[in-house]
Length: 547
Image (tube, one colour):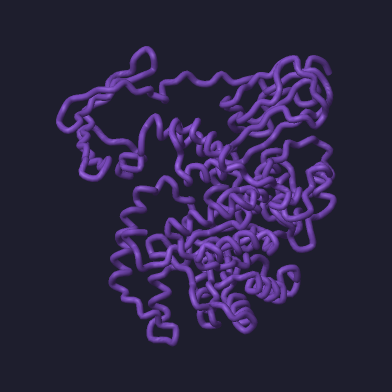
């Protein structure tokens, strides 16, 4: 912010979800907005994952009160040109935009997070909104299909004041349309941006070099993909879901996952898919493919499934309400009646106790925390605790050069590390010794020219985890893991008497958390896992004393 004072900084704000995956108390959302605005955020793009305006009002009011610019978003799904898809019609979007303007929005965003807004649909939608609302329109899309440069141009031609784009070296596919191409396409027309192409080329070349460092994290797409119009997956989710699928052993079944994603969307009522609702759809799709089920099987199959928490949260109404609500038979299959929320979720949450939170964070950090750290813990308690532990053990890793952080230095390589203003460390790796009996190696290096050595655990030498036996399908005594992952919590112990529906444990894989509930009454003879235990799908995690 200090180095770039003359450009507006913008962030996404998921309304009552703030920057998380669940609803937060109103005072947490308000405090987060206030702190973010004070830190230099100028524009807040406020959206709700189901386009539910009641869920957006707290965030909109907080942004306006902070003095920042409130850009409220309509999340786009469906196809306004398709007469068969009437749920998300042109009238639906116009009505929604008027509600947002009335609620206090100072700008209106069209958030086309999947890239579904085809060129002529973009023109028609923007023109209708431009004719009906009196605030500037900002068009945002992703270029997964390859058609979105045309959509951006049509949006601009029809009255959009702003379109989002990315430098050429970071554009296309699941990213935004190509800025360099848009500028050239509009040159010498009424849409001419006036931008000089030479600096754009320079910036694009710079970022192309930076991108090389992150090749390992690319989504794997080689070309635009019109399958987008089948699965409707947001651009920001595509890479995450692909990595989740690979982690669950479903990498070679990606086409099945994409089709399951589309089927699950229809199963839950054809909803707006953007974080966190898109995660719910993706998590259920992965669960179905893992169990070799189709979405249509869900209502007829009598098997007890451990549904991901995100799916339960969605269908219980904890993320809000879609137009027309969720299909009753799907809700009944997945959610207990007592867990259903009908009003705005934030209304039923007690205000966060910031004083108690500050004490808790002080215990975790071992010092007086900053307001940002308290907010971080309130938003992401487990992630913050892990981050604080890592920072305490390793220090601020962000001072390391990117290649050294991601890949480690090579023998003979020298690193220059600025640890504070005026204090630079010169570190040269000399060599790495042979493994010791305890699984460590000695690393020899120079620090500012002085020889040093340190003993480091070599994780590649750790003994392979001894796998547990698989739970026998049909044996009522045995409880198996519903998916591969890491055990997060264990709520029971051997000897406990449990009742059907009682929580036994939870596990997580790539941000997908699933709770395992008791399928029957009985006494547990064994609990074979603990927090931090890795498990594979079907592995035995607990056993009842009798059948």
